[in-house]
Length: 188
View 1 (cartoon, rainbow, N blue to C red):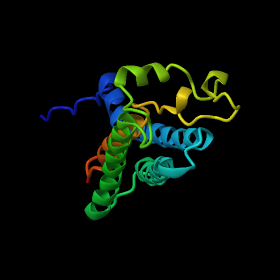
View 2 (cartoon, rainbow, N blue to C red):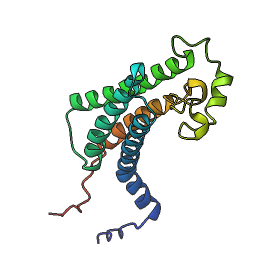
View 3 (cartoon, rainbow, N blue to C red):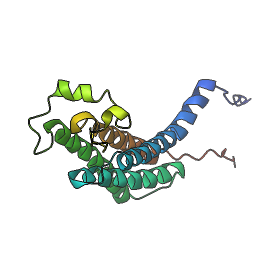
View 4 (cartoon, rainbow, N blue to C red):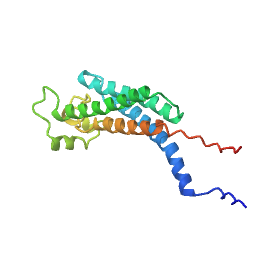
């Protein structure tokens, strides 16, 4: 006499965890793509199109491209070679480093400023959004970064966060075991 095969398990927790493993990296990748697009648009609106500030737009543009490629690969669950994975992860890490460099640049202040922008003073300028009337100079022209032309010191760190989050979602979403075949096995 043989033992009957056990009935298939309908463990809801396992089903939820399988769903999270399958779709969470894709959702995070799409979130990061939207974040990069919004960051690029905010930089264009806030006047980052002059001088050294163009570097921020360049990094935000790179972020949009890397995020689109990364999200496409994760959402479509493409199997890609390890070299291509390494290139995309390196691009994400470059973006994260660019955010750190931008943060350092914002903290040290612009050349030609009367003095270094202190962290406490710069934190106060972050409380006034650049699109409000208080952010404009006396002559009616917009000032880059808020009142008195000071740049918010921690603004570029969002690029670092998006880069690290995008890299993590890409690594998890494209790992070799991430794409599983959900078809039932047919016994012979």
